[in-house]
Image (tube, rainbow, N blue to C red; front, side):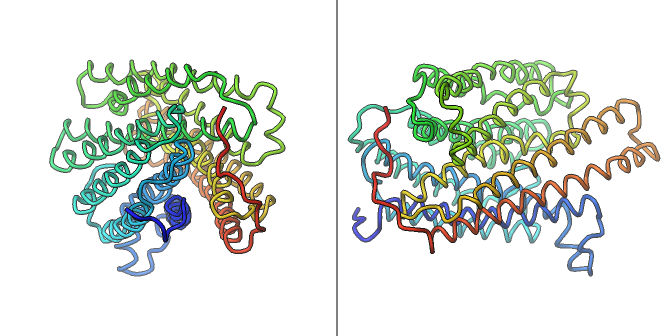
Length: 465
């Protein structure tokens, strides 16, 4: 298939640009959700606003937008940039790549309208109706085909570890999406809950985690100037993610209406996740030895290392809260809200930001417009998340202990909710900081594309050592 009229890396560039638009939309909706948590009457202007701007409609729009409008296409952009670089071969079909960009965005936009109109499946993270799920699966299949053909045509015979992680995601993402979204819509009871939480956990564990870790292993040697510490460790991490992560879904239903053996079946592999997490940590420490000072000099590296740190903290938090004792206190509280944002925003979104700042100048031949805006983006994002995260974690602890003390019904329940009001205000403040950071990010990328200084021509990615 000819690609003569389309520049290389156009697919990656378009995924970057469109995902930033969805990021801003998702953050605006997130702020609406945060404000409505403080003041439920917010936006209750008339009957129409009351019907369409309820929490029950806005929250699924927010979660789906940031998961499948922002972060998933962000790692698609990394797919379509990193795979050709590491294979030293052009993308099999840039035309097909560009088609999948626009098809994904059109289908997703229709899905958002349907969610806004209340046409949704009542399963968390699976709210998209079947008429949207089927095209998403087909589009993902086209992307996998395009990248698989690129890898088959590679000129570099050695598969660098990032390609191992990306090949894994090309198998796991369609698999978990099909399992998590199609059967769950037609089942009920425990069967539906088990499938739903297998999907909820594995969208993080089998898609964002290997895609994010693969991106880290790509960026770290280039930003630090040092080769990866241990290729064997990185492969151990890959295989143990595949072996352990996929079984973690039942830990979302610990102390819930599932058999005890199924709870244990979710808890044990959750604890075993320390193995792949430790391989990443050991590789990061080994690679960065003697180069830690570069974090203060290189903003892209600062984004990536901060995201890696938050990913590590999320992987400590996850097994801890999967244990039956802590779970009895923290489950179904605001703690879960803080925990969910830890890997998705503070972890892998920061890694994606680093990837954008690194890759885009090499694709379009322009320098990043403002290093100052990059710093503002970093600090607003990190400080905003810390305010948001700690507000939710503290609220969750108070909420859980309040319920453990029997304050679950009547006036006692209302009193617990009233005591959390200040934490919900802090959540909205933290979310505002996070949103301001993304405004700086979007403006910087826009100005880079339109007014950035011309950069010297260079290989998109020097050969990895």
